[in-house]
Length: 192
Ligand SMILES: [Zn+2]
Image 1 (cartoon, rainbow, N blue to C red):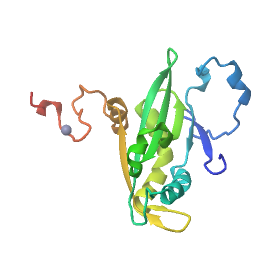
Image 2: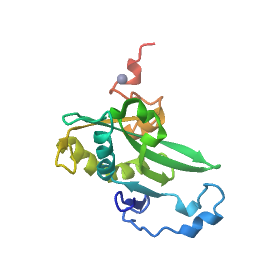
Image 3: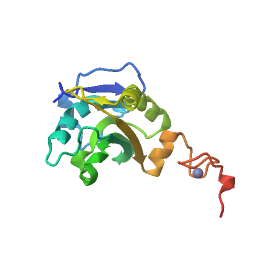
């Protein structure tokens, strides 16, 4: 699987980090899923296009087909953080194909594109999102070209809980002057 969808690693604190030497024996002495503090900032990600290379043929050949030639592929990106143990955090970014409709509610249809150890913060997320910006730009502008050279138009969606969406948009807090996730209204404009 790794050769079809290569997984690359990175470190948020070191932009050039791209080392694939996984220390397999480390798992044995880590209790549960807590990680060493030295590992904060480490993460892994995989290409959205290489995931589509696997997913799209499945969706076009299913019965009934989820995707038919001419359809637009609606890709939703999302993410969230979770606490691990007392003070550690994992952040995961996922994508799903909204054309699958209710199937996306199943975790098996949420494809993780990135996982890193560390905080949900604007700085971390902007470093991570930079890894996808080129691919996303390409998909949005040119669509996705499958192995039969069919071009599928792509529409991108984004969702998350308040905290995650606010972070990605660079909003500080629900009480800040410009708090709205949808427009640039000022908090003084709120009608109470
Ligand atoms: Zn607004």
